[in-house]
Length: 167
Image 1: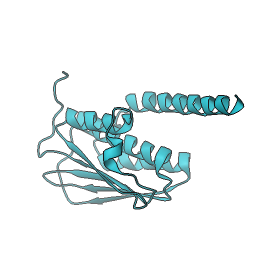
Image 2: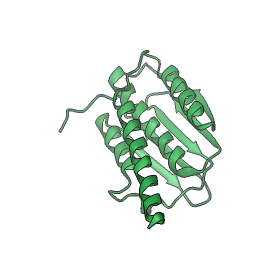
Image 3: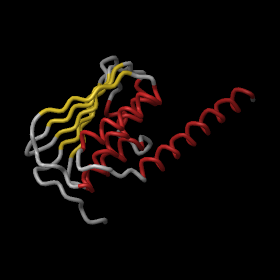
């Protein structure tokens, strides 16, 4: 009986933390036209909350992203970082940005990895949220992982990303 109560308590605490995190990300706004600064602030918060090593690398040149697109990008990156925190067992996280005609954002960790086809079910809300947010700006999310090899989440924007009309 006590084991069941302890498991229930752990599950409840995780759910509360997930709701808090979702509410915080729901209100995300960028205070700048510079996605690099917004990502740097996101990584600083992540490092402070987790104590993990996280670095940002930005390469290339490109026009600034529209503010509404930046918000969706930040949500995807935040969700990827949240998944690292909750599931990866990682010690190093790298966020890379490749500016250009097609921007690409990559979150890579050195964690335990997983088999991606097992994570595509409706119970894996984080991956579904990332796909939905990417779809709002016509982008694609790609997840590469294997057990013991860490995980890489890539967000590839179209050449001219714009918010899609709500369905």
